[in-house]
Length: 294
Ligand code: G1P
Image (cartoon, rainbow, N blue to C red; front, side, top):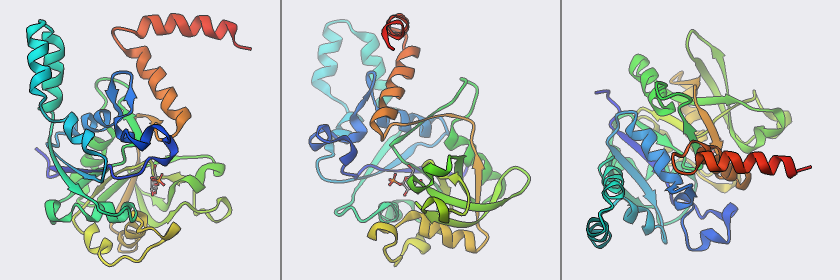
């Protein structure tokens, strides 16, 4: 087993891009076919061999913890009606990881959310996954993006983050890094949160997958608010980069920006097409529909 034993997933966000549904349903629980968005992210963690998931949660988010808990009444009903397959599926989810949740009382920014994990994570290396982004392995043999980052960390013992190339018009939506290509990775020397297109140091964007050494916490401590008045994870990453302690790598994976309405629908369609029960019918329907669309 590797040295990365914990993953942190911030889930305290207000989900304003998905209002009104998110006024009572946590964004992380929105379904991708029949599974909540967050389950895909937790599965990515489990497939990297990580067993402890630290959820940074907030008010009105208890549905998330309930999802990973047992539901004895439901289990008994499934048992009685002989729905063994569903029962097994629920058990598999419950046994996938250990959930440790920490309440973030105020949404002060991503950097603040990550810092909330310090009492549980201590000085160990850990992964961070943003739940808006769905990353699926293109083939069953491909390691998950988190596993790819863990592998680089194991090799180098240096914090490593995933990056992707984006169009110039998109840079203002992301944290952007600048760095120098080395053998298998990029040595990061600058990180800027959501720069304007004409100020961006590159078009290498952060899609929300990170592995950090425990050192990130010392940079997050006492970090002043940055862009949008929020405590920014990218500002702490910039400090790691200035000390020559941050690597970035491109990843092999299918990415869906499920935090965006269109991206969310696309993820549902594409994952729906792979679904054993409805995939084929959906394919037929989409063929028919494309004939009708102008
Ligand atoms: C956050 C991060 C940003 C990152 C992005 C990925 O921004 O602050 O650096 O590129 O996630 O989705 P948010 O989209 O939460 O505003």
